[in-house]
Image (cartoon, rainbow, N blue to C red):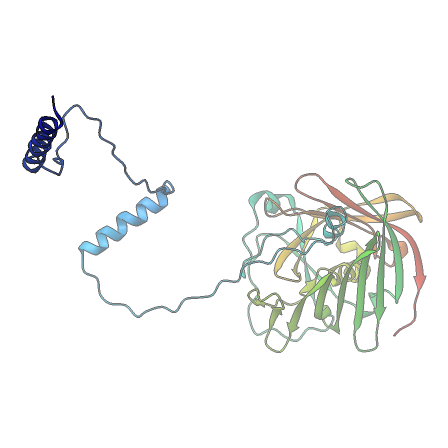
Length: 368
């Protein structure tokens, strides 16, 4: 085959391919064969399972939407203050110093005290009510009480003289001993008190200062310094107590105390009339902390002999039982040999951990 014939056949084949390409479709049909697999996707929204209360609320809203309701004035939102957690010194020191504050773990109390449980009412044969030494005539009728009430008149002369008490403080979670110091100063026009607990170079300090009125100690300012400082301010003219933590203010009751002054108030009341505080007697005191307040119900027990680092002391035992699931249990022993100031303070957490503060020595001090 010569070259001319070969070129002619090649050209003919190329022309035939060109014609065939022009007649074929350049796009593939969009339809799939039934046998081809299909990929399907879907979106999933994660939500919480509604509680029965939420279901009932949703049903109520649907019913209300079907029935037109009368227009009501719009209510202004009320800002709710969230509790600020306690600041910590360190992972090892903070639990010990944080527990020395009686009632520090108490949940924020409502402005009105809940009614006492039937068990506590049945176990208390008498309630001691604080009355001023020279009370003015009341214009309102006394409220009825389910328990017999014993009037305890406050006597200013029963307040202890200025003194500094030192304590050894033990905690079950720590192998070392903490040191405590309580300074009480009786002034001409009022008082001031300070409790400090120290360990490993760290210190927690509570301070109370105020006046003395016919009902006893009348705190004006209570502070709790634990790295930062929180304070409660007593406004006697308005009958309110406010907090630097911006928690809601509370209405003050007669004889209201803070968590430090209440120890001296108890000492003065018992010293005024020891015969009125027999076993089973209860005493209710509004007690203010750095963020909130609550009604503390103390139940009196028997006189006990205490073996303490500073020597034996007789102590009248008082117990403040927890009111809420995570409240602390507070036990106090008031010693006649210390002008009824605490010879021992034991605080027990809900989980069983405790801090035990025991009297070591006393020292007379002069006024500031």
